[in-house]
Length: 136
Image 1 (spheres, rainbow, N blue to C red):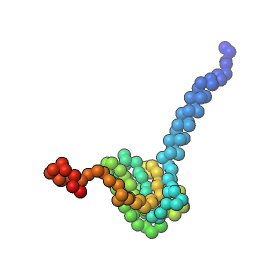
Image 2 (image 1 turned 45 degrees about the vertical axis):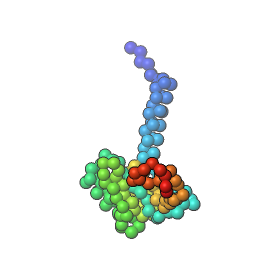
Image 3 (image 1 turned 90 degrees about the vertical axis):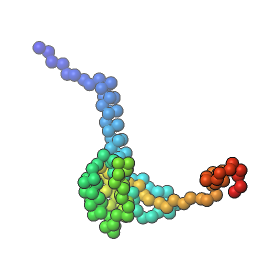
Image 4 (image 1 turned 60 degrees about the horizontal axis):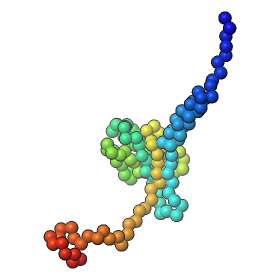
């Protein structure tokens, strides 16, 4: 009986490379830190977005871990709903690195102040006005 060595085909190698790349990119993507623009006015906090699929109990356990890594052991805001699971906390650079590696953390985002302008017009006179005449 003659034994032949099997050489992987180029197609098989390309498919394995693509599968590995997709896995690696998705893993890196879920562990990212979104930084604010350098000229933005920052609050000093980070928004930690968790996977929506976690339970309330898992949320509270992760929250305890995040508090351990925070600068002041304080949670500034939290949302634990079916729509979003978010915790806002002050973190050092070391804390950021540790929190982003926690299980079920999707990403961290540096929090900034947002300002609106009042110069926008929606071309509305008064919503509760009975007549169609625009009178300011």
